Image (tube, rainbow, N blue to C red):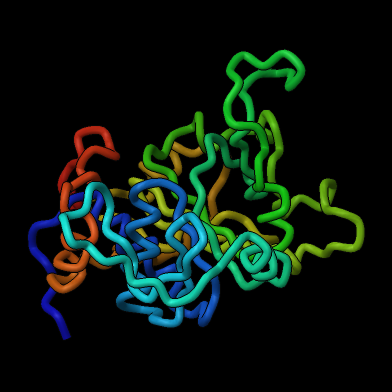
Length: 267
């Protein structure tokens, strides 16, 4: 067993916490949207779930994840087989996929928004990406959320300004769906890890990052969380995990994804 690292950044802690979300998935297509979620998916493929399927974001299924950024002369991508969009969507529609996305807003139902901000979606204050593939993703397969800055602008008091995904909201369930058909896994933030395992799928505090209190998490959330009597600390990365992350991210892009990228242990 690898030794626990003493020095690690918050980005590295979040990558390892996100990688754990895929541990029990088996052979599924995994997609990490953004630098840190992508590194988490790659780390999971090399550690906790070697059955993960991962593409090069074009048309090849890989036997080894690609590193981020510019690659040295002579780099050889480890292609396993061709995987065009038709095969990707076969996995999506059959539920054999797990993504980690980065919503701009998340509400108490787990519904997410990446589309627009403001009281009216016809005249938004801020126009963003549009709903894109989020509705189909949330209906068809497992989803986790990645939040670089845990605050009340993200974890909103009411519903999301634009509801882009289904969540544990009975009023918005698609016809023929039950709450138990929804598969929201983890929410990884810069303060903690959460899931929807509280009463009636309430967002529940699973672990606190070192040096963070449950009160800090609740104070930065726009709705009530389920906080168990005893909440463990998010496990620190191991030396082996940090070595893999460094190889996957040789240009240290991870250090630029969080404001200041503080130490992972803020106690």
